[in-house]
Image (cartoon, rainbow, N blue to C red; front, side, top):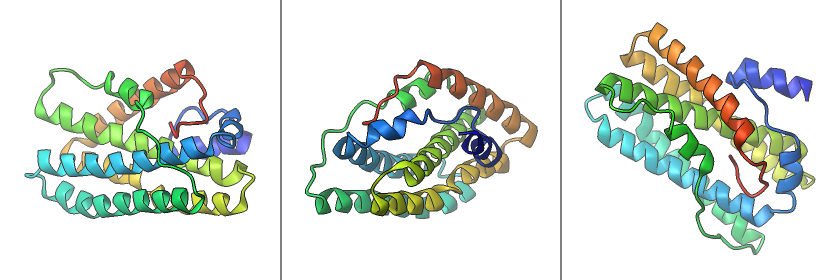
Length: 203
């Protein structure tokens, strides 16, 4: 627990590690956790498409996120293939309470720069927390194949959160980005305490 906690802070910047009980719960909700993971990857791809459309005038955003769309959609297909291989079923998409709570913290009615900054930082935070959850699964699942499966996802996604931070700093003053990022990290830490520990959700 202690090493994981330090890894989370040093590598991902997150202020609070996932409760270790979460992995134990995922073991009895395998179909549900794979379903939720599939939809998380799908939503990541769709969000990147939306960000490209909204920020068509930002050349580096378009260049960086266009291949990410392909990568995230490829991840969706990988998870879907794993569901089918195990003769499980892709269930219904569920409300993402974690992301909805993050959206509540976005600046309301701000200028274009403030909206862009929060768009980039919310994506950075979702990617960081996803990577941290994949690390938990890669270390805690009983199924060796799934441990390796999630280790590959962890490695693949590890750099995504820094990409969104770098894109923010490309267009917004670095001190402003870092100040707002710390606010997001603090908010997410407190928010995690309010969410139920559920084994059928990635977040």
